[in-house]
Image (cartoon, rainbow, N blue to C red; front, side, top):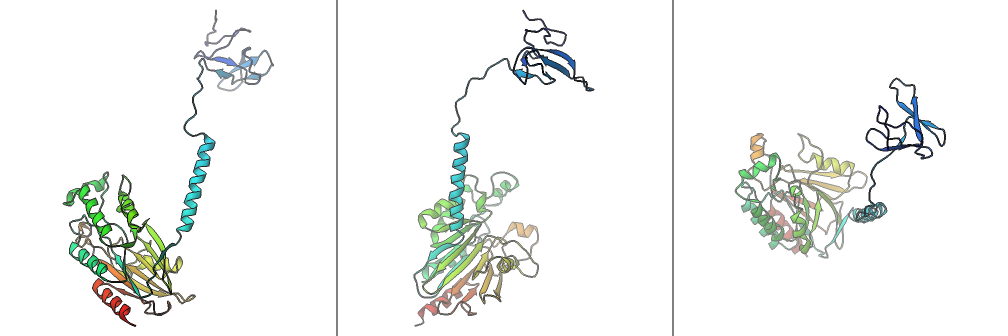
Amino acid sequence: MTIHDNGGNLSRVGIIQRDEDGNALRCPHCKSEHIIKNGHDGSEKKVKRWKCKTCGKKTSRPEVMKNYELEERAETDWSTEELVNARTEVFKRKDARERKDKFINIKIKDPKPIGLYIQGDPHVDDDGCDWISLRKHIDIVNETDGMYACSVGDLSNNWARRGKLAGLWADQTTNGEQQWQLVEWLVNATPYIFIVAGNHDMWAMEGDPIKWMCKPLKSVYSEHNARLKIKLPKHEIKVNCSHNFRGHSMYNTAHGIVKHALFNARDHLLIAGHTHVSGYSPIKDANSDKIMHCVQVGSYKKYDGFARQLNLPCKMMSACAVAVFNTELTEDHPDFIKVFWEVAEGADYLNYLRSKK
């Protein structure tokens, strides 16, 4: 028989004391269940005090013994040690990949001059995409020996399926399935050396289909930016591509790229897109005599509702650019790299250089 006091607890020696919830109490020091009430602790709150009849110690915080027992549960899929070790291995692989990918090496055995078609943001599913120019430029690239292609990203609008951008699907006549059909056509239209994913490309919630499209083509695909070494028989050209370099100026549309070139990377060619404007700034590094070419390419999205809404002035000379590398010259020569805003002119110049004996 259990006898409780007015507070719901027992006060007799030899009888298990319990709290108001029926949980047994015991001494936190010796774990004995032989405890009795021993007044209050003297504080303003008058917290109840207990005394252990076994060890003689007093406490205002007796240990609560739950009136139930938990069955021993099976371990989860990963023990803590296994999980820590697994995450360590994941980091090791990522660290090795990041160190290796500081520069992505691309070897081209062609000893003659080469050209790089720098494709601005295509946005192929947008009604304002200039498909006439896009197809024309790709045809020229495919017909020109020594001409290679790259993309600065935003292959499609790829509006997010949630949030305020989801409503923009209503402003175009293509749906999600057609979007990926057009992107797949573009990825396979010409051999790209590399494609850098833009912010629109990264909105794919179900994963990144472009990554899987590029795998069988052996094209370099990188999120947001890529730094490459194009290894030629006589030269090693460093190309730094980012969908966007931080920094803006009302006086220079290539300001973000120039800023990065001066304070971060001494590369031969730095290229970016994203802003749908054109810009070009060649800079000579006084210490190394290296000439850095900062190229801001536009977009094939010729008619842009967002730009019209904000009444933004058009600062786009071309949707793309072509950089021609005259490998017969030294890298510090002013004409080692020439930039063209018209693909046909760049192709003509490249054909001329390659035809020279």
